[in-house]
Length: 168
Image 1 (cartoon, helix red, strand yellow):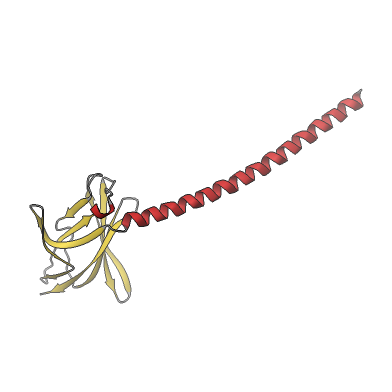
Image 2 (cartoon, rainbow, N blue to C red):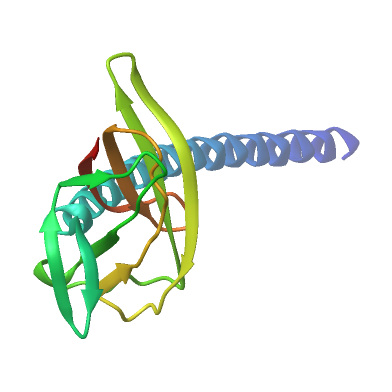
């Protein structure tokens, strides 16, 4: 009887081990499937980001007054003491809203050696806005070519534009 009891325990142990092996193998396959799903999700997110920024416009004007953009240009002449203008973001062509409560404008100087980030300015906005202006957002003090990038607080780009600054 004692021998039958040991055989029964051995058979039960074999079934438990077999069950664990099958369960672990199944878990591994599920992990691979989840990983593939995650990769697909990342690709879709990247595509969505491209869609979000394509069609969005970031451009500049001398002033935004009474609903009018005055002096739209990508070249501005400043005095040696510095100068400023207005940055516009138009998301209406994308049929999207800004979707966040804060926007950052990153000011980068473009040179032959590359890009140098000069400053990042933070602004409060309304998530349902699709047309935004930032009056006198930065005082430019040197001539050259600049890139302005509007970003969400998590670093997602909204739109960007380039402007050339010249001295009088």
